Amino acid sequence: MSIVEVLTGLWESSGFGALASGAASWRNLVMILVSFVFLYLAIGKKFEPLLLVPIAFGILLANLPGSEIMLDSIGLSDPATMQAVESGVMEAGHWYDSGVLRLLYVGVKSSIFPCLIFMGVGAMTDFGPLLSNPVSLLLGAAAQLGIYVAFIIAIVLGFAPEEAASIAIIGGADGPTAIFLTSKLASHLLAPIAVAAYSYMALIPIIQPPIMRALTTEKERKVKMTQLRKVTKVEKIIFPVVVLVITAFILPSVIPLLGMLMLGNLFKECMVTDRLSDTAQNALMNIVTIMLGVCVGATADGDTFLTAKTLKIVALGLIAFMFSTVGGVLLGKLLYVLTKGKVNPLIGAAGVSAVPMAARVAQKVGSKDDPTNFLLMHAMGPNVAGVIGSAVAAGYLLSLFG
Amino acid sequence: MTAMLLKMQMGWGETLKTSIVGLLVVIAILAVIAVLILLISKIMGAATKAFSKKKPETEPVKETAAPPAAKPAGRELPETESQGTLQLENVDEPTAAVIMAIVSNQSGIPLNRLAFKSIKLIEEK
Image (cartoon, rainbow over all chains, first blue to last red; front, side, top):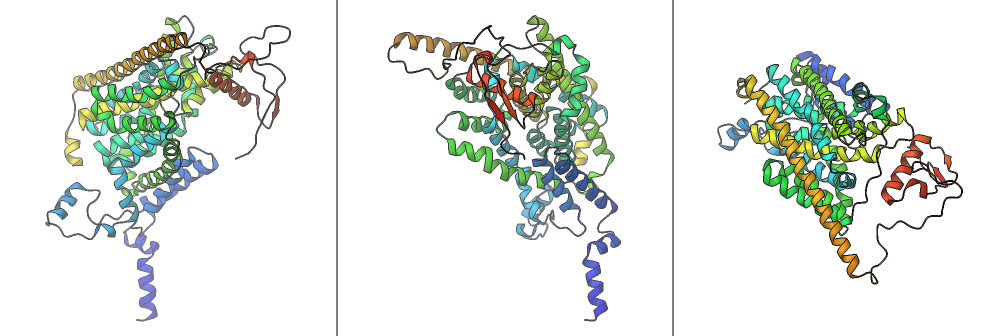
């Protein structure tokens, strides 16, 4: 073998060679730049770094020229190919010939990762503020308005109902729920939807305050809410079990998400499974977050991600977030009137899940008008109610289109 | 699969109906849960009352009972103020206020019956 042949072989197998031969396109290069921007936002600006760093790195890994990290050798991502392979119509390699992230992606596709994340979220959630003020649940429900507004607009824009439902769930401001529903209904849109959902969750401190201020008066924002009652341990233990049973009987499709959420919460509250609670909210949560983030990022291949559809999804996600905030604040205003000024409408905005960022935003906006006003604990009620609300909304959409 | 999905469309009426029913389903389920919470708290309250009436002597110190707090000297403090002088070390006032509110809320002791001595940042991340 001559030196020229060796050098030619090296060139052809390099990333530059892949670009020159057309195996990789300019879209991959753009996605690499996008991953750099995300890394900067995560590390430099601290925008949801725990999620954005793995997502950004996943995007980078999948778009490097010559990368086979998402190689699908047996049709793991395509049911038709998998069926053909299984029935012997098509010859394929072994499952272990697939790219490492394609193998891990099975956890996303099968909804294992979103459900495990929900268990961790449950183990970290204190439903105390919600139990001491059950009206918070209505605020959490109203803040799902954006899901249905975005659904209508998505249908008008020409998306199929399954796609529209997956896009609309971005308004629930709950990453795992968005991934869960999308992987069931429109897995080809997983990357843009996940990226939009997590990006907007990180941008909540920028998106929500102008809407909250525009919809409320200074008098409303200055309302000081009375101290919450102390919730007993027994109530906290009964709550996850009762909620799961009742909700599951009404809407069985919500069981995977809500079931895991409540299991994690029971670990936390029952006081006899401290080790399980600790694992669910720390080690397991961190491991799954890494795998989920990298896998979701790796689905953002330049050729499938850089399309007009992605731009529409990003725009619809923003609309969903804004209307969810509007829904929560408007019901907060209604409760302000009904309770003769005892409810601060700002806590309604926290109904958009995104625990605890949305509650912190309510606290921040409220304390701007009155620094002695402490809304954080009051906003945590609608905030955790939003988690249940978005899971129920996902269950409803799944039962219709799944 | 994608092509098949893309062929499916919904009419205006069906879209609106799906959205309105969807929002109502979420509100209804969460309202049912709210009612259940109220019921549970009422039952728990009644059970606790009945239990404490039955065994007043053997009742240990209540988990939720607030520890005795020193009486405020001078004027009665409003509920939004704590007692004593607070020293802040590398912590801004809004953060300190939030921490104090959380302590008050979690302990069930009104802010005007609590005295914070100092709040300091022990690790800068």
